Length: 205
Image 1 (cartoon, rainbow, N blue to C red):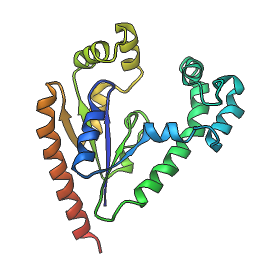
Image 2: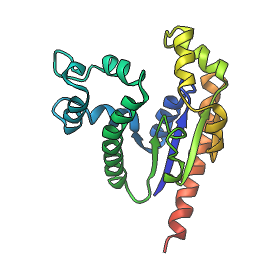
Image 3: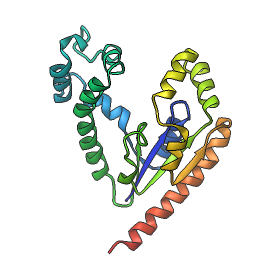
């Protein structure tokens, strides 16, 4: 098995790379998706969040009111730390479960938005960074996601710098160009990941 960390700044195109890798046969472990699952109604995760932040962070239907919770934690680093202390261990445990259920010849790609920020690079056999210039990210966030320029800049500023992400990369995928230029790069990376996985298995005692 080869364990790969996949990351990239907001608007860099990491989700598209993840989708392509899945279509080639990678086992994707999506940290954002798991983070939503572990606080769904009826989960111990949601109960722990309510115990920490109070019932006012619930919607009328009993689900997590994400905008309300976001408004609390993104304005206060200590509250964000408290939320992460609940959610991160649950995400880690579920990710490990999904990884262990993959075949021994699998390429398991952990899609982790905040890999560089949380110092997670050592957890993986190698790290793939999807890279785009800040002006490209900004353009995509405003044009495709409908964010205001101010909101887009604020979201980008809250993440690691481009240099910090590239510093932890073993492989960089350049996604400044059109979508058509991305697929051949990702295909080449997939072939390299498969080659490394075979080499890892061959070297195992």
